[in-house]
Image (cartoon, rainbow, N blue to C red; front, side):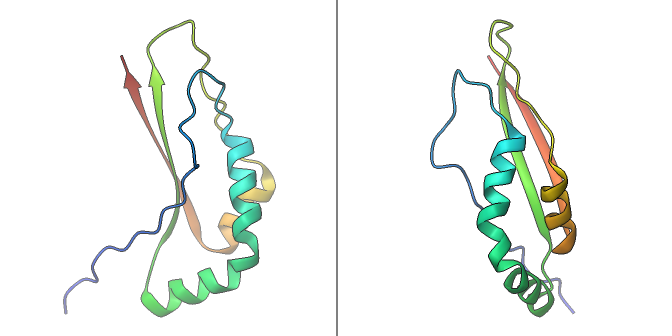
Length: 97
């Protein structure tokens, strides 16, 4: 039996944030508020299609020391939602020159 092909659904901010403090706490709060009404559908899809759910955070951080670094963390409500849908968190950071 072959493994299922990888499937991905991505939710991304509508704008690229530059020269501001990036607040992952706030961004994840907004995302979870939008997804919470669909938690049952997310669980159904995961079970039906044998899917995994991951909150993927990708940050490109400048090497310029005068620029602020992102605030990375998650409020308890976000963690509770992710747990309720069996999701994990993956954070990737990259340096921009």
